[in-house]
Image (spheres, rainbow, N blue to C red):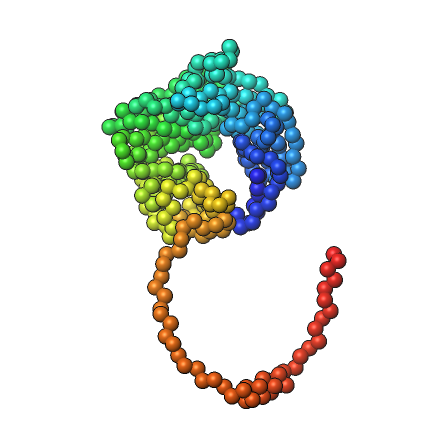
Length: 355
């Protein structure tokens, strides 16, 4: 489904029935694009009240629109043995028509090789209509799977990132950068050294992605992360702590919440230092949604079933007491006297339900 809420997640409304989304992008409360069934792209400009349909040459993928007209879709083929064919499409008319800019499918005679066929692609982001990045990972120690284009995706080159000391041979996993304006962007990079040594570093740029600098501090066992400004973000570690930062990862605080979500948290989204949401994996077809208003200390279930059982509390053992049985005639007279002492107003007529 495609659902919309206007009360912070307490209630949800289906705005695109009978469509199974396989990619979507909503830059505002009113504008959005959804890739649906049978290679159809749906577009709304009024918050999902009405939709325009376009037949497109893809059936899913990473979607991004820079404005009302210019957008990209990185569509992927079946993944196997760390091989991931993709096709990059560009539109200049809001999604009505698309031009294929690149493919690395070895079965396609027009395929290129500047964006490797090997390696899983985890994300795509364009700064403008010509410059963009694709991030991911490949099972090669010390290999940073981050590629950049400056010609709208026609060709790609690998980005060289400086590595913290001791991580030169780490297993590296990343996604595409997130821009805050034209020049400032952050890039989360996960580095694994052996079992249980997964560290999250934040790379940043102030020159539009020409150069990148890693944060002096990291989050041990860092998992999900979300930045809502160039300096402010929050990470979740698998030890059960939220880790906010106010300086682009130069230092991290520690927040212990009222619920330990473990590794059962596919996604979270913060809009300020205090307010954020997170979801857990589906339970019996229902996805639990939580909200915090104090920076992650307290989470309230606002939609869905709660998979975490409540903390058991000691319940006092009931102590039997003896209650005297009243005399039947005296009890009946008490009821009559009570009713006689009350004034009853006539009841209004039943509501006409034929509305």
